[in-house]
Length: 363
Image 1 (cartoon, rainbow, N blue to C red):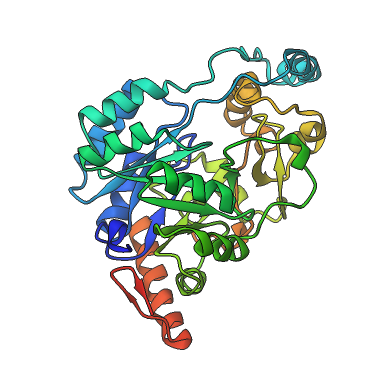
Image 2: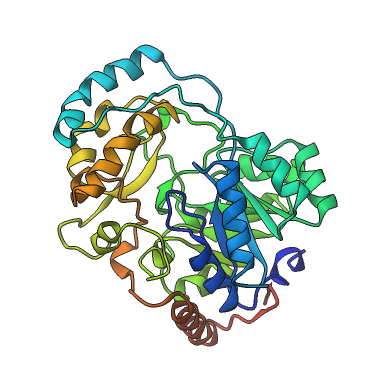
């Protein structure tokens, strides 16, 4: 079971695919070269841009890597609620001197075109967020020699991914930075505290699925990696930890905010995209989070220009500063060095815990 993924990397360390620019070819290539598994984020990119990044990454490493896709979203948003939110953001548009985006710019993220490229020119791993592909899609990737991973946030989603034929699931705890990868966005769950922490979710998922599990959510240290391996994961996925690396394509303001005492905590918000996502609490989130409708990707398109304008103006208070709960533990190390440090911390921790990681087998 475990070898379905663990023959792809030396260390059980996966660099999370962070859409928006952070997971660029240089970062992914460096992580893979260092012994982890680097990932590109195809979300919000055109198929042509995705293909170009894959070419760039292949020019920098011959090691395995992954590409993450966003699943198409159902058209369930209330247009009236989106229009009300547009009116509320009029002051932001005036402040940053930029127009609001078109909320109807598309909801499928060019999914079919990206699938066609990845099936025509296969990559080692493809992962999926915001849903689970049909069995036919996963079977096609299997025939092409590509391993598939589905992001899940509940035991039911994990079971559905196993039934559909995924090679593995990435179990995302509520601590994770960025978007929650739920397969169905239910606004009734907002603020209810029903989201599961990583260790509880990991245990529940391991009870009902037999495919390998990657653990994600707030992980920043090798000792935490040792903990999730002991709990049954074959690898740990880290995003915020790699976001501050010099190879990351994240905006410099975003990187500095990770450890800036001005931004002391994170929250889940719909303010920037219309879907729950964890980020550093800033002015935009405080002023607009409670009013943002459950409308993804309509709100994402609406606020895209605002976020870019805020970054251009050097104003982190208007940016989407995605971050996991462990953001204050971020270390500004080169990506290869960070992989080395995490691996050394993992070795030290597993000696104390009596955990041995051998090509994915935990004993």
